[in-house]
Length: 278
Image (cartoon, rainbow, N blue to C red; front, side):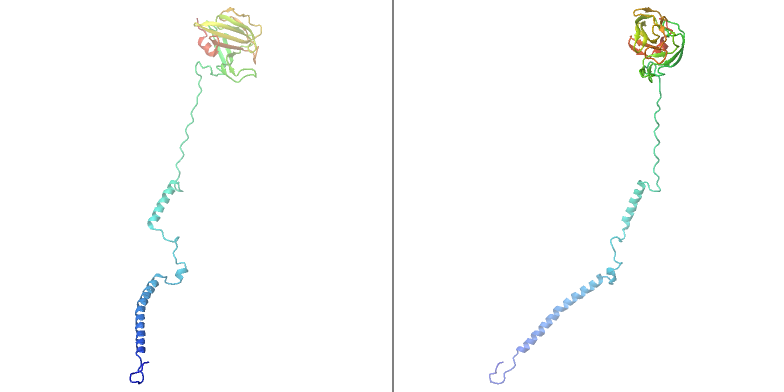
């Protein structure tokens, strides 16, 4: 406190009055600053109330939409249906029947032919059966008249264990002891015994300027009067039908050899040449 000059009672200091004034000024400033903040809070509260669910049940209940339950856009659904339809059609659906299988191709028809001149034709093998010949001409069958053929030229089922399955001659069965005549005039190459042919003979002929040989086998032992180098005439006795050597029955095994060594079908050769005049 200050004393007055006159020594009287000190006067009250203006300090207390200025402090209250300052307090009022600060309060005014605080209120002024608070009002904008409260306004911002009010605005935020307004927007927050509009963005939050209407009730607490919307937060945890079944009303919350999920990704699986989201509706499919119309264009996407239509595209899916189109793809499904095409897929069902290509995969042959229930209402689409698959096309019928193609008809099977016909199997090739194989026919068998007997080619003329073929050495592999087999009509048991080249012609079992019976033939009839006149018994005349410069070339003849070994037997005149009717002759039974039992096994032809070519492949066959072997009639015995030691017999050949490739028959290189023609078997004739006129009966045991039947005389055998020379098929043409010629010269005897050999006559005698053979392990397979038994009593046999080979005669060489010249026909149309070429050498042709004929072989006679399985004759009765000792029935052939021929000797090597002997000249014979067509139809001359060669021997008699027998079963010597490797044979299953009495028959004549007859062969034709072109050039003296190449075996050909005897029936085909006789069919083409028997009865000719040289």
